[in-house]
Length: 142
Image 1 (tube, rainbow, N blue to C red):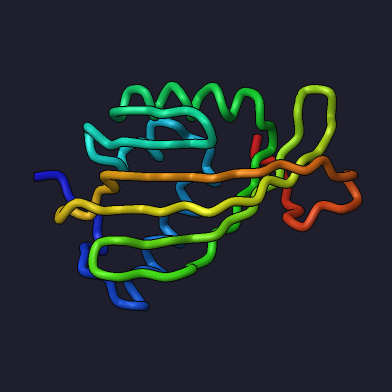
Image 2: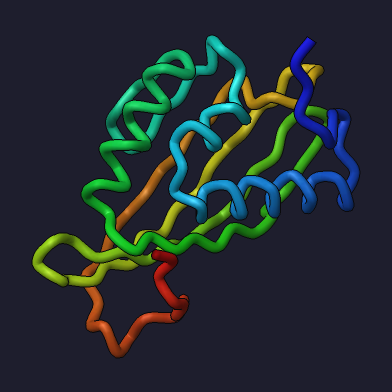
């Protein structure tokens, strides 16, 4: 059976580990790698889109990172209990014209016993920012 430690029920330490692992994976911008954190039948709400299953998640992420260039994300724990974690996050990205954005949001996660995420519900808002207002400065990997 496929597993993705740490496994629920979560403690403060393991919830923070789960969040850091998610942040690290999303910052790779690798749809294949990121999609492996979700159950094969995972259900998502991302803004106004509803997705079901790893294949849909992988396609969604591929399209996302083709539009949201130089994406950089930071997540933090909001609360947790048993097999659920809530996070707040912000990320920065720019479009093909060079306009930078900061996106703010909240996610509610529910995990299966094997540590894979079964449900992800995300509410996200975007604001345009100047390049000089960026918080998450980093070098782009070639």
